Image (cartoon, rainbow, N blue to C red; front, top):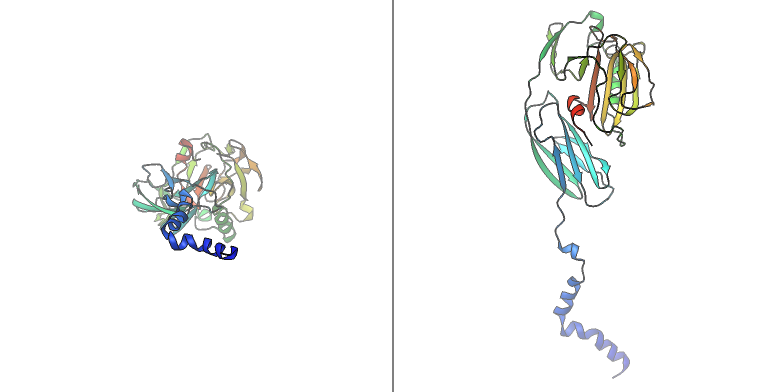
Amino acid sequence: MSIENRARNSQNWPVSRHPKNLFYGIFASLPLALALPAAALQVQLSPSNPQLGDTLSVMIDVNQQDNQQPKVVVGEKTYPAFAVSPNKYRALIPTTPLEAAGNRTLKVAGDGQVQNLTVKLRSRKFPVQRITLSPGKSADGATEYELKRVAAFKALQTPEKYWNGKFIAPSKARISSIYGVRRYYNGKFAKDYYHRGVDYAGAAGSPVTAPAAGRVALVGTVSQGFRVHGNVVGIDHGQGVTSIFLHLSRINVKEGDFVKAGQLIGAVGSTGAATGPHLHWGLYVNGQSVDPVPWRTQVFE
């Protein structure tokens, strides 16, 4: 037999005589990982027993760094998850007094997987106040410029995280109005309104400090058209978290400044739609006003 014929027979022999051996050999050579089920997406939700006004923290562990930022969908809204450590992300979900209590379904997507979580949001009773404003300080008198600047500020979702640890109170004065209060203005109930922050009854000129580190992203004055907010400072804490401070008598920072927790940013006043000297501190998560109190008692990574 020629060399050419022997080579041809050698190539054909395994196929014609032992086809099963070849079939098994192909699959035996595949990586073992392909035969194993993918690890389930690791998701942790806190607090475990939330109520209206709370911020929900969704921690997501991924198995691989595929440059795909995980997302959390609640109803028709999609919330980004930002990196907090290697292969670990966190999304913050705001809840407000205008929502109905009950079950919420969170759809978490990451690592090429989707996981549905159900959380029960407890109801919460909010006090009702009656506020009388002079004609020149109506809450309906905001300028278009004022509204646009504030809306753009609250919508910030800077990827960097600037805060560290618990937030601190921006004023040493007593709290005169808590978060979530429903109001009547000049005898008319303000539908779809709730007090979006905490008021401190500080004396005019008393210090206002940053509750956490961040970048000053908003500075506005009455002379610029901030008729309702008054003299105002907004701090971007990063990753969708912002603080806004209203009715200031003095501003000690400028846009672009980076401030540390406890740093002086202004002074208590009564500018804008205010009945007297006080500080209004509003905390926003992904554009929605949340209760600042939990941020002072627990750590959001």
